[in-house]
Amino acid sequence: MPETTQEPIKVYEGLAGVVFTESELTFIDGEKGILTHLGIPIQDWAEKSTFEELSYALLHAKLPSSAELAAFDAALKANRGVPPALLEQIKNYPKTANPMQMLRTAVSYLGLLDPNSEDTGAENKYATAIRMIAQFSTVIAAICATVEGRDAVAPRADLTHAGNFLYMLSGTEPTLEQARLFDIALVLHADHGMNASTFTALATASTLSDLYSAVTSAIGALKGPLHGGANEAVMDMLDEIGTSDRAVAFVTDMMDRKEKIMGVGHRVYKFFDPRSRVLRDYAALVAGKQGKSHYYQILEQVEETVVARLSGKGIYPNVDFYSGVVYSDLGIKKEFFTPIFALARISGWTASVLEYTKANKLLRPLALYTGQSDQPLTPIAER
Ligand SMILES: CC(C)(COP(=O)(O)OP(=O)(O)OC[C@H]1O[C@@H](n2cnc3c(N)ncnc32)[C@H](O)[C@@H]1OP(=O)(O)O)[C@@H](O)C(=O)NCCC(=O)NCCS
Image (cartoon, rainbow, N blue to C red; front, side, top):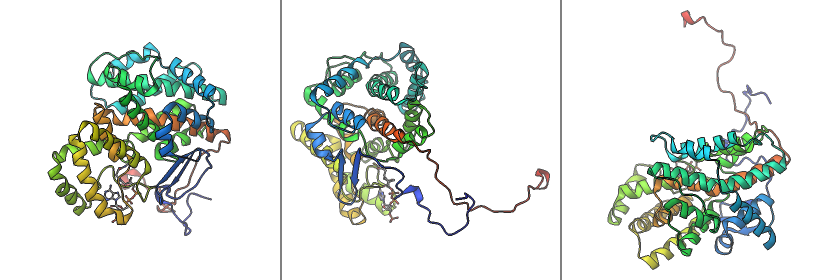
């Protein structure tokens, strides 16, 4: 079809509703609020599994046996180290850069330092995927250290993926409960079908470019406030609200002005995002044990007001609405939320690239041309 066509043709704005490939990994029913990986509900993954197991399942499109999971876990632990040259580079990133800009650059540099990065064969891509999942935690923790002006903490091989990350973030070993809560957050964010960053990764990979390039592109897409940046924006809003007694008036005003409330609404879910329910329950559990945090109290008021006013339109709180409060209760600063989203989503990105490129097809949609035709190229002096 020529791109210049002027014939009546349906334009799928934002590609909404367009199906371009098949996948065995993730199923979402946005009307009913269902999310499954390999057919297994997200609630079960969150309650009964780990980020390591889900990562294996996504990369292989099957559940691991206990021996397979043990070998996979050992491979992740063995790959936590990153080249010293990268750590040195991260230390010298400009202080004006934000953590996602740093992550985008760091992952691109990681590719530069990998002598096999241009080997796009399936076997090397799989080995690179495992390394990237493992190294992401060390890279992101080192970025957080740079932002905070302290030395990076070296990874430990005796902790879980989630526990080791929290350890590198603070230099203190987390409690089992903290590590588990963070593990659940990683599980909930590991994959989410054809979201903007995964699609971006596939668009890059579909040109037969390498995995580092695909992931670097995905990081660029995740960085935007309509995608990965939403939970940080939720925390900004909660900070602006200040106290729970101001919450109802504040969000009512926003809705009256037709402003978008961050952490609310979703392109796919027209009911509660099931991940948001799991996180809300855990946030409530933590609140029940430790007393409701300042943020949690404001959030409850915002949720009630938003659901009462917008649920009729199919607009409900999404996972980002709660994840920021959970992270913040874990002592994590809000500028690190989006890199932490990447820490989880690296599994989905790499698994989706491995799956898509098995039967690769260059991604190349069309745009309906609405410009002029048959125009002369007027000399510049006459324009
Ligand atoms: C995620 C998002 C981009 C999806 O948007 P979309 O599918 O393109 O939906 P639209 O922006 O067309 O919104 C449809 C309607 O719902 C309203 N709406 C959507 N999200 C809203 C929000 N966060 N707050 C208030 N109203 C919202 C729109 O104003 C619009 O109302 P209208 O029909 O009266 O004009 C959008 O909901 C959003 O910007 N949310 C906030 C950012 C966020 O949390 N992102 C993380 C997603 S996991």
